[in-house]
Image 1 (cartoon, one colour):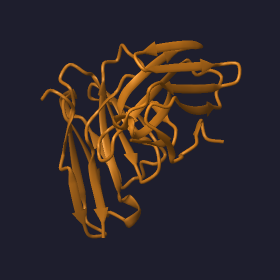
Image 2 (cartoon, chains in turn purple, brown):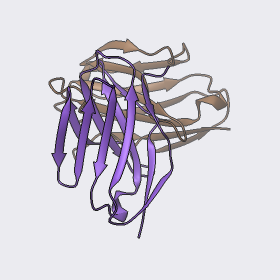
Image 3 (cartoon, one colour):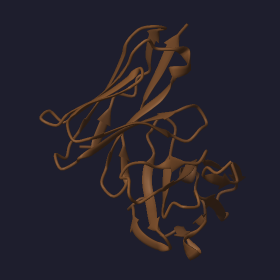
Image 4 (cartoon, chains in turn red, purple):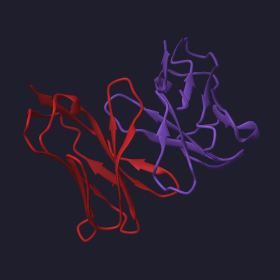
Amino acid sequence: QKEVEQDPGPLSVPEGAIVSLNCTYSNSAFQYFMWYRQYSRKGPELLMYTYSSGNKEDGRFTAQVDKSSKYISLFIRDSQPSDSATYLCATWRDKIIFGKGTRLHILP
Amino acid sequence: DTGVSQNPRHKITKRGQNVTFRCDPISEHNRLYWYRQTLGQGPEFLTYFQNEAQLEKSRLLSDRFSAERPKGSFSTLEIQRTEQGDSAMYLCASSPASVPGELFFGEGSRLTVL
């Protein structure tokens, strides 16, 4: 079992819709959870960062961690074509462990 | 631009040749990471340095791969006797050690082995 599992998509939604991206992880000892965004031919960039359980909001983005079910979510409200990218969930153990990434397309 | 810089951006080589990639991290960051990414996959950890000390190497880093970070500044990743399976994007990232999980990535060096 991989340490971080993520559906690769692609996921296509119309502009303005709410997007829900999800991951699961295997090790209950993980405490730090991240979402990175990667545009085509670019390196990943940190989007959201959460410690332990709970929600964190930043503008149109909300990250959610449920440690009881080992589930990580990212919600994007009022999605824009510029949100089209690959979204990588990740956790931390002296290094970042990434999921496969979900390719997201926002249709104008 | 004070971000992470990687060179060359793209390298095409023949099987069996050696290649070297360079990474210049953000100057005040003491941690430096190398990752490898293939199409449709997330980045896979290769190795990381704290200053000049190489603290961890992945099993993915076979004996044909070597990384250095002399003087704790820039880093090089060398691949000897390249194979077609080495074709990938090699990503470098740096981090201030105080913030777990906050990595700043370069734009990557794409390797194509013919």
